[in-house]
Length: 477
Length: 113
Image 1 (cartoon, rainbow over the protein chains, first blue to last red):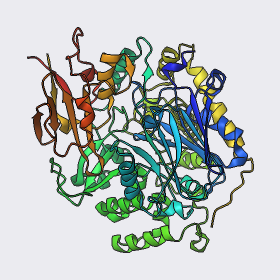
Image 2 (cartoon, rainbow over the protein chains, first blue to last red):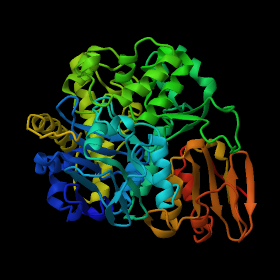
Image 3 (cartoon, rainbow over the protein chains, first blue to last red):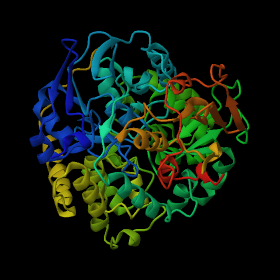
Image 4 (cartoon, one colour):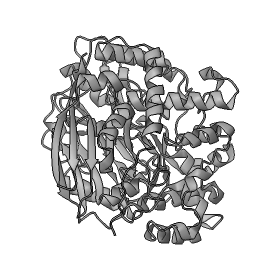
């Protein structure tokens, strides 16, 4: 196996109880058994289950020429649902992490004081984060970048909600929130871990023919989009043309996660003219919408929904649960209350929503969406349906069970291999066969779509099984 | 052939930086590429820096600017590393520019001289 085309071959083990960092080799056997991403994360989780592990992992295609190779996965036990869950990173963190020289990071125990984990140049350090603690997500990201002297530093960080251990907490990927619907932000808070901060300057070898194969696939994929870009076509796919029309005048530019042929994020400008091209002195002209269903959760506010998202991103709150608690409030009322919500920390019992996740918070209501959420191991921030494309384009029939099984398996393959799971719902051209071919070429081993599908099933069932194990939680005061 | 940059079409996906490096270094990294994305993320201000043989071409969304060697670049955080990089050879010996091959949006296109 040509591991060097896919991995640096290092797993970092950070013990926050002891304040120590160790390194172990990523061996061929682990890759043979689980390939990567959510698969290897799960194996590492099981190995350290009694230490409340939080795992950050990458796939063999993450940070490669493969289209939409932006995926990272954070795996932990959800304090919200009690299940072992996998949350995708789809912006720039996973690529930055993988280029630090580590493929996986295992975070064990709890620190006594606020810390950050700083990954760079084949090194991992546990560093004081008292300067960042107490700051909102945007301020913390700025401080991390300032401290490490580089605007290209990426950070998985938490806001007030995570610091207080709220079950509404979400970790954030840079400034813009994430797909964390499982309160893994609270797990970071519980560990006194303000951020996992990274800057990658490393490199990988590239197998012969891999670049050409990836370009060919990318060109095929581009034919599907007909110039479509950003969140508006995604909203239209969800049947929300009116809402798409309401927010469209605020779009500055559409932005893509790493190497994504489709720019699935849109920057909304409301503190400055969205038509402006030059850089001005306005430091916070708006926010980037990266979570389409999070935005939809606030569609009752109309175009003002984007201002609510900015506030939520800063506080490190999860939008769909927050919107349920907010109910039908005006923007001004909601902005005031959401601050209180983050301050209240973990005690949500008084709000009568101790476990809203089981109540199906996804703004998409369908039998298959409910089935998917009942399984509850992959983030429901990724819509439970094809986007831009149709079920038929993916060859999926009308049965809700078939749809749910397809969605879960397709997500699993993305989470294991390194392909953005949102993009895998946009492009039917990213087939299991294509992904298997790319992997075979890169790793120099025979891998079929059948192998991938079998592995996906194994990771799904073992993740569900792992959730039944006891993990000791102890929120610090 | 020459390279044409329209940074209003850039989505910030970064793959051009890696494709450029792949031409010069055969590996997947960014440190020896001649293209570098400039990203002021919170302001959504993205531009492209392109190191040429005798200067650095700054493709800003509002228009291009050429920086002579040693000149100070205003509003271009992260610009320093590109001065250390090798200049673009327009993929000498190749039929196509690698960055153009990789760009999914038409931000980078080939221009016949």
